Image (cartoon, rainbow, N blue to C red):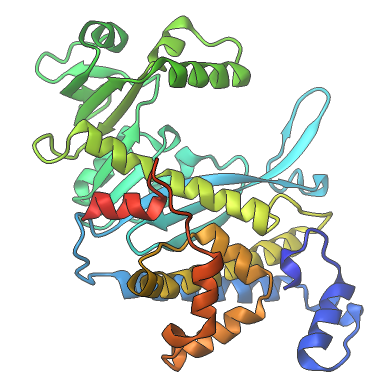
Length: 388
């Protein structure tokens, strides 16, 4: 419970233990437990839960287009400066910043996590990419930061599928002549493309390259955002932002550009998850902790995340069946964190098979469902439309 507060203290933890156990402990006793061994216990607990999730979803015969739809992404957590050296901080002439990078793999089909990793900031997405396990029939949705020819070939070898956003410095070759393709010139000429090309890296792997122009307003927003991050971008780079460009191995006769765009747009689920972490779970508030305390703090928050996702998985089909509504994970998280005791009660109801008839289900329906909107679909509706 105390891990969710922005500013923890051993005294606060001692008070919560007193509240739960009806017995006093000292803050010194709590401090003595905050050791590397305790962190390893928490990590083992997380790994056991993730392995059970993995095993329960393996070869379940899910009647979907793909066995799993994996989203891999990372978020940055600002740390106290005392951890600068250990976590490979960033420095210039005037400032130093200590950051950690949290790598996450999330499956959109089972709506479960398969990986949490607390990494040094210097371990970027490119280095983390080969660590994501692939199974036959998976679809992975990744940003350009994970794109390498090696990763594309790893998907092919595992008989899995991928959709990547185009990365500006990737060079494409004509599939027959192996000549360099001037992509911008091709886009200006054709406006819309859906072609097979080769990558300019051994073994010259074939990929499907698709692109469509976007509207002017979105293009200008992209350009302005890019300029804020780097004022020295080339004219060619900025011009390419006027298109949505992807590479994939999904077959042309099965998946149109619109369907691939819809699939890739599901990636924004991970952005809402990160937003939830920072707003509801205080991932953006880390006080002056040691390295061991940092990992204990984050691993405990990961356990809270797994608990809330488990409740979501149980409540979602019940709410859909009874009320024909969709549960918002952000709203449900906020609801549960207002009183963590509800989680224990819910698991008791699930175990007794009385969750469906409980008052808590009525509360979840009242406070945790998406609002009905006529102008756009919520995430769950989008997911169902794509996979049905």
